[in-house]
Length: 67
Image (cartoon, rainbow, N blue to C red; front, side):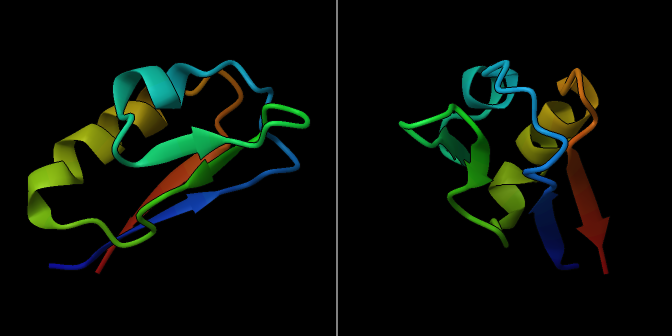
């Protein structure tokens, strides 16, 4: 199974929740705090972290697409 992380940067509210929950998968831009995926297609060992970050995102800016 392939898992992709999609961050809608226009919706991101820069809460840092994704970085706190999954620091191996997410970071934030220095200039405005908007999140981005460090690993857009993480390995299976990170799938649960990716799903958890998406669930906890207060602005629902993170989607996890599973193929």
